[in-house]
Length: 109
Image (cartoon, rainbow, N blue to C red):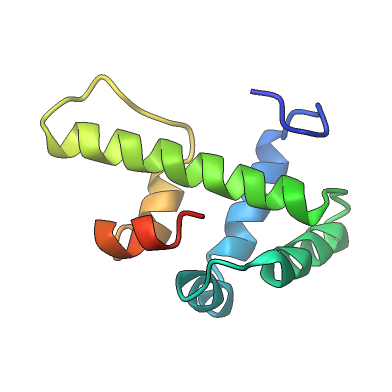
């Protein structure tokens, strides 16, 4: 799926995004908020240090898409289905696995 910029995220870009996202500080900020532009501006700034040029909107969109995909794979697994999988499931499970679904749906938008 192409995002607003039309430019696909490379595996390395997604890895870098997940690495930043796995920062406890970033996670805590994201868990408690809906208005998260400032947090994603920080994320985008940190990506630039890796030489990755993405704006905060692209980061937020990718974050939401990854989270959504993770949740659908996770619930498929919870219901016994093994047909669904995704590339970064284990990395995301390490970040999102401890969050209850109730918390996760609150921080969706």
